[in-house]
Image 1 (cartoon, helix red, strand yellow):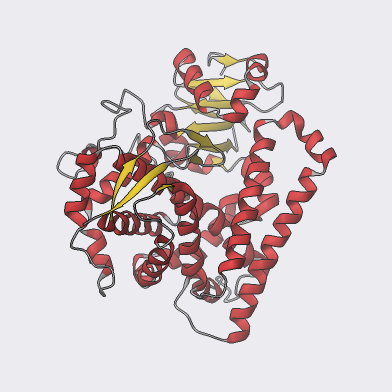
Image 2: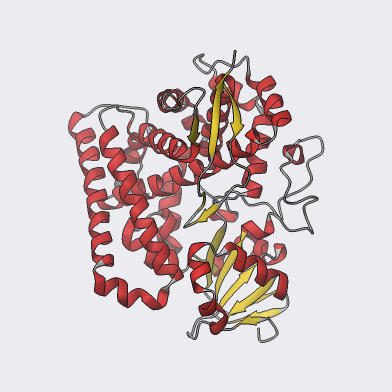
Length: 442
């Protein structure tokens, strides 16, 4: 491990302000200077390693995944806010609940949610002002959140509570990002009362979900939504999920599910708007669709070019732009021996733009993912993670994104009003602001 290039703690502290605002330029500069894998000396006992090396990533996430679990960044720092769900747990506890929840996201189950999804999307798209310039990110944020809410609860009387929940999750995320990027200031956050205040917000969020779940149980209503599936899920001994655990899982689904989708949709629409020829190609594919008809799934699976645009946008701007793992034991990765408890920070953002794997890596070229010329990207493309811990809702998210892009472009022609796409990397990769003009099609 001593042969792996190391960045000093001084170098990190010197760049702390720019790292807090946007760490991606610092990451890029370090990868350019030190190569595909480097260490960071933070003056602590644990070793921190950044990598964009495809072989190392595949080894950690797939080939030897049993030796690599979620790091304390998620199992402790994030978990104190959102609880102990799939996103924040490890080991047997994670495996039991993954097996328990997985059936809710099988293709046949998701097919039953498509009409709920469509109604939620149509309702949210009414917020778009025709022939006006609008920041698309808040619109997509509300849309993705309501799609998750309706798919979970399939009821219309929770809209205000969902807006409150969305606001809480955003505030908590901003606080957590400060904690993670400025770990040496945690004492100050605690002294100011920031930590206590945000932990209280987390309690409020769980109380909202508890009330919604209790209302469902009291009503004894049978609904074919995700909450019904979770309430009916059983452990091997036949018992149901404890209420606290159910609330944690639902909160994680909200936190992780809506945000990544909103980000990916915003970037996809921004890129399509900046490439008129691609936009017209998408329109030619979607102009005759009608999601109000029964067979929504068949229509979605036929929108291959629309899906390619989303896949390419997620290559350029992966919502999960960096992923953490910690080693349970000593291991050899790419001929270097790493200690137990080494924290790995995997940069999907850098891997997805690596010149070893992508021609014109910064260009938006949806045709890369065409089945007729598609290369094997399994070693260098991870929009939903990889291995056993791949995102449980990846199919749900893709259906939602294809349906949303198709619904928007069928009605509007998109025009950009700014050139550069500015990034706001928090827990996920967000756009800073994306102004688009929605011109009604004649």
